[in-house]
Length: 422
Ligand code: HEM
Image (cartoon, rainbow, N blue to C red):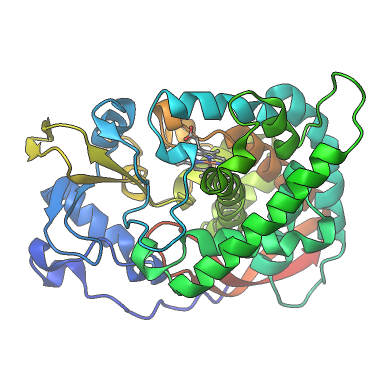
């Protein structure tokens, strides 16, 4: 396999003083340099204050136990007004329950979480499998193609269209809106302009407002609710008048679009990449496919599709011996916690039968723990089951190319060549 050496876009973290390093740079993730940066922080200054950054001063929390502490204490560490390292400064300040504290958070989460209840997931499994099979059967054999586009994006956009009962032919719009929502320099050191974001999200709102009205007008048998997210919102007292609160409607839609999109997409690509980096694990998988469920947790740990979540301290608090003041930004680096060697042995390796893989932090913890975790795991499990049913090898032949963002930790390109089962 030919995985090119990453261009050094950032300085060697051991060549400078800690105070000179910028832990908020999207380049750390784009160039895959982040491990050494956060390893140094975990060793030398695990709760670290960075006074200057493009996002203002902030604390980096880098060890597993400290991250858990922050995530468990939502009364001290608020998710309002946002969970990204940067703040919204444009005219589209999205309001979403991931960025709300109780009681509003709990009410709104309750309104939509039934869409991913076990009963619904079971009902969705065969549809997901059919779609996965179709995508995999249509892939070229023995020639390079972009796995990110043809598999990871295609599959997750199809799933999102299903969750929203969104026009299937327009499903790539969902992917675009998701990329836009978190991809500006001000929010996460991404590359979209603020104007692109505003225009795209305006289009998103308009499209969903139309869909909302269409759904209301549809004939439904008495007492029955559609199982898509819009119908569920319309049927719930807390969210049924959300059309009158456009920023909240848009925020919650974007939350579900981003939640179900980048994350699963990058786990799909990251899994193939990791199994190519650790070929003995690939052999282990082929010899024993019953490891798949545990492997999915391990891939999600190894990839950590969302590198961070941000909080604001409600009052003064001491963490890891450091005095955090009320109003300070506190960034939990899940990517670092998942590589904490005091919890995960050989944390940089993918070990598909790792005993404590499920203890990863990638879904967060506490009241905001990922609502779609079971859905994501199910999708990934099905993809891997069907890959093993078809291909003897999934070889990474070029890339991957990383995304410049300190939030969505993922890939824009990965050249893959498939060999059929003989
Ligand atoms: C929340 C990661 C898949 C919907 C979260 C949080 C994380 C996360 C870290 C916690 C946010 C916080 O503490 O502030 C992931 C990863 C996924 C994934 C790594 C895939 C591997 C999904 C999917 C959906 C989804 C498929 C779609 C239904 C949500 C929602 C929240 C959330 C709605 C907000 C929960 C709340 O604030 O109560 N996710 N997610 N996620 N996720 Fe996911």
